[in-house]
Image (cartoon, one colour):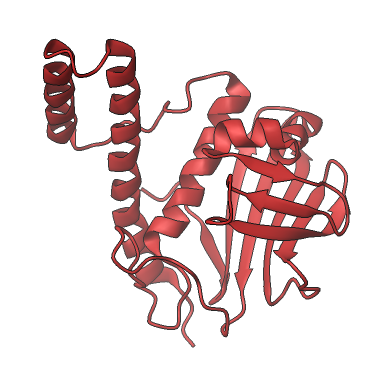
Length: 224
C-alpha cells in the first residue's frame, strides 16, 4: 500500500495529502468547526478559531492543547504549542486549495529535534522505526492517516468505517463470535455489540496500518 501515505518533507516534518471531491468551504467547515471536527476525528475537541485562540484536543487535560498562529479563512490554519511563536519548532498546518472542482487537503506536522513526543512506550505502534531521535511512531502517524480517511467518509456522508475493514478476517470472526455469545447470554444488547464490533475492527485496522507505516518510515525517512 502506497496511495495516500504520508511523506517526509525532512527528517522532522511529514505531510499528508488528500483530494476530496467537495468545495473548499465545505472542507474548511469540517476542519474548523469543533462540532463537525469532533464527529469525524474520533473524540471531542473545542476550538477557538482566531489568531491566538486556544484549541483543546480531547475532553480533558489528558489530551493536549494548541494555539492558533496563522489563520487565513477557507485556506489555511496553523496550530502551534501554547506560548510558542515559531511553527518550525512544533506545528500542525492545515492547508486547502481548490483542485479539479474539489479540494486538495494538506496536513503538515513538524517537530523540533529537541521536542519529546509524549506517547506511552508500551502501547501498540509506539516504536520508532526511524531511529531513537525520530518522533514518528507508527501508531501516531497511522492514527492521523485514519483520521483523513474518516474526513473523506464524513464529507461523503458515508459510514466512518468505510474502507477500513481489516485484512485479518479471522480475528474479525473471533470478535463476532465473542460478541454473539455476550448477546446470547444477555450480557450485551445487540446495539452495544454492533458498536463494539465496529470499534474493535477499527483498532485491528489501525494496527495493520501501524505495520504499513513502520516499514514506510524505516524505508523513507531522510538520513541525519
